[in-house]
Length: 104
Length: 158
Image (cartoon, rainbow over all chains, first blue to last red; front, side, top):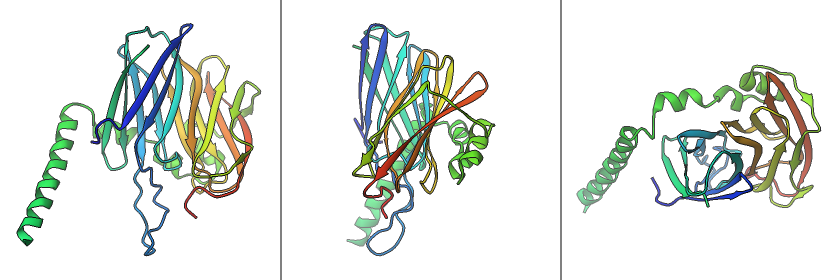
């Protein structure tokens, strides 16, 4: 629901595209406690999907063990400069966000 | 004054609901697909073989020198430990990232789609010093590698 909560860079070099994404998310494990001793409820991204050219490039399943404001980088072949790349996530509360970037 | 507050909460609540509604309509949220896909049992498993069995249907892995784990020898902040896994194993279908000494060892599982290379980089939380293990699935077999990371301040909020 947050706007622009995903920053994505996708660079093509010698037919390999390197994608770097930074997402804004508290990634609470559900084990941390507030100052009053109550547990902070689990709130973390569960699934991340990355697609381009009509193909799903990567599907990631995460736990609260991924750091806050998650960083993700991966590589793929078969894309061209100018293609759009889309990254979306869904968290354990059912919230979601997505972002797009052009492969450069 | 009180009704004002109630009105604001109601409005905020309905905005949230409608945003979700829009998301569902847009196909962004397909509850059935997402909830079914997240491997809950694998993430709840406490031991590595149990976790691998749940996630990949196989508790056995073979150590492989073709999987490289790049992670700091000493992580000063256990809340943010950068880990990069790269593998040259042909036909890699998925990569699982595990922190053996975490309360819930499975951190992430990456399914590599068409054209994706055997490479993922991310930052993870480590509760205490221990091994980071990467398991690569390819051609029905599981390959693994590990790297020990010392953590000076635990990352699970403890």
